[in-house]
Length: 341
Image: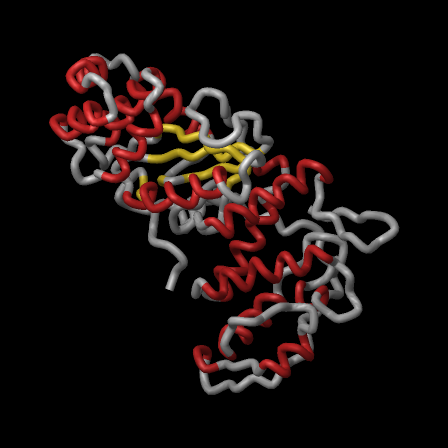
């Protein structure tokens, strides 16, 4: 079971595995290529737990064993099989702060690496989503690798509508398609995070990326741009995603009239190509950033490789703010703050 469904793709065939930059991950996400970074050559997995081996799906890790092996990890809410999966993952991924060992070793009682607890929360959230251990490891490694400057794309965030504080330090640039159902699903968590828990810290910048297989997406994008110039972008944006199955001319005209715009004039200008330059510019920028599916989201140019859900978006924004300040995930608890990443 995956945490979300597949994205809308530029072609009917997936040319890459599910993440972008190396691809776009399952959906609502895109990802960079793996950057393993420095890892200790002597690192070892956590001590072997008492785990039943009746089969891969039947492995169990008891609460007492979990507390003994991973004393600092909060594994509440996980069942025995999920605890075993967590241990498998924690024994394979490396901490990205100052501990410089596997996550399992960094969750030992005598380790003070604060960021290991954040990593543990991230892994736990993905396990609860039903993501297989191998995929969790891939996502976590790609997530931390994405903070490197070499993984970031140079994207404008001033040529698009702004939701949230326009001066917020974190820009979420989203390439989307009005006929893509996964973009409609992503709308709420994206809006919620910039207007709720990360208000003042993050802003949303939606960009047009109509796909060839969606014949009404370009027209719908033109209508949105018309509305933007009339100060009604977000009203039109909401209407587009609320009525994805009804994007014919009569419906588009009706939606415009409902928000106080001249529907006939809007369609006249759209079909005249008055907004094609903006749409094409957004699409070229996305193609240059290797966007292959919608929605694809970048956090200050960094590909968002996690599910597009409020928890994961908030975590990504928080980590981005820390990275902007320290250029690292700071290990609180050392006299000299070490950096890794």
